[in-house]
Picture 1 (cartoon, protein in one colour):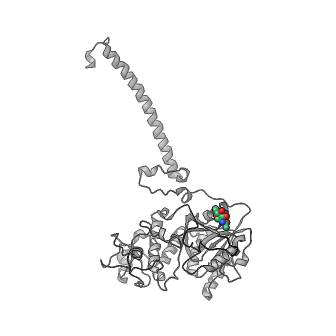
Picture 2 (spheres, rainbow, N blue to C red; picture 1 turned 60 degrees about the vertical axis):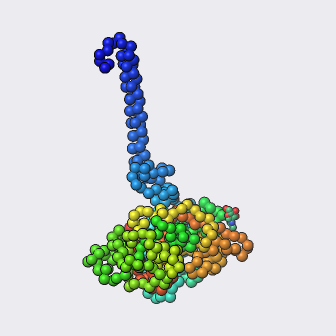
Length: 416
Ligand SMILES: *[C@@H]1O[C@H](CO)[C@@H](O)[C@H](O)[C@H]1NC(C)=O
């Protein structure tokens, strides 16, 4: 209609004025959009290259990326340089060479010469097995930073020196994150009120219920029939640690893990279960059935380890994590902890009181009447292969081979 009007038409003049105003509007809007797009582009690049630089991950709004609230502390966190003037020594109680052979790869990566924090690693033999001791001798010969303690005491407390920082790692630890040792050392240095900083040891002590939550523990059941294991039928070789290559569990519909379940056969695997919520895996059965296993049984432990390897592959280890937990109400795992040499005497008392499956009590009173603080640093994970709970339990699974295969593929240095 506007084209029919003359230039002197009041309404036409108004329209021309409006259209000028519109053009100006579009110009400003366009500029704003350009700035916005450029900003998101920069953010996306930062988020993709180094997510730890941002307090949140903008990509997660676009793609379905799981963001842990503590992301900055775990994966992609900054390199923590070795503090000046502090000597850091690992104490490693040694039991089984098959397990310590896996830990060795992680320890190597934590040595000062490989940009780690450990100046020295001292193994403390806890076995009389001649072959294992020979193996340990040979291992120590190969690495100048490795030594064997002369004492036989579990902690070799006399060895400890006041101004040295100790990291006690059980020789049966079969997985550590790159930052697990740095984070407990850093927390120990920053927290003068704690006697010891324990790492986030998968499913041990006070963490057992946290790590049994739905979505952390995944539904897994043991394969029942050895015939199913034929590599030709399932295409999986024995040195593969990937959970994604496991076939789905296939067994009787009414199958449930009961108390004192016996291992089906040596070298058996645990397989993911398609249908959830039937309360027949060990953890669900332990929590919801009277006839279910106790949380200390090997079946519960097996499910925890298979769930852990599953999360390790799918990059969802953040589900296990939290920042710090000071004096949890239940006992703390004694598997991996950091302390000053000056506190060795107090820790000797504390370690002396623990019972095999319980860990370190946080309601313990020292002989001088004080109540020491123990803190769990939830940012760095460790997995402990502890098969002592039921003879022939965990050892009848292929878990150790899986941890070994993972380390060979991702952790061990090629020169060794
Ligand atoms: C434990 O921590 C509290 C608060 O952080 C502190 O006041 C107390 O002195 C600590 N206890 C010991 C024995 O260091």
